[in-house]
Image 1 (cartoon, rainbow, N blue to C red):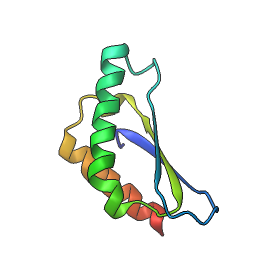
Image 2: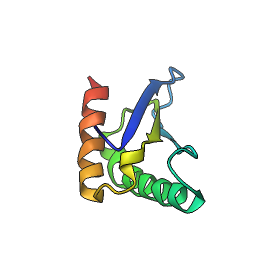
Image 3: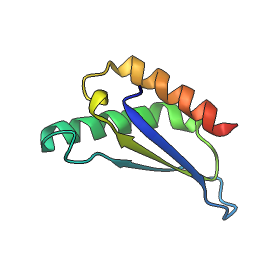
Image 4: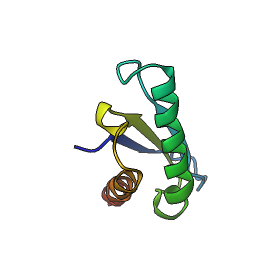
Length: 88
């Protein structure tokens, strides 16, 4: 099971910009843990979304409990796989 849930929704406004949002609930942990997870999501988004994101769509990463202790490289692989699936 991945460390996050990815939601991708086309905006349909003709703009090719890629939108991104992050959400991590209090169920995941305290503020320090949630902020760490959001920092990791931001780094992943900067690295991967410009190349693999769906143009003209909004992407939302929702943190899961298992994502906090997951290796960064594994999260990157999971995000690439999820984006490839969403692009179909």
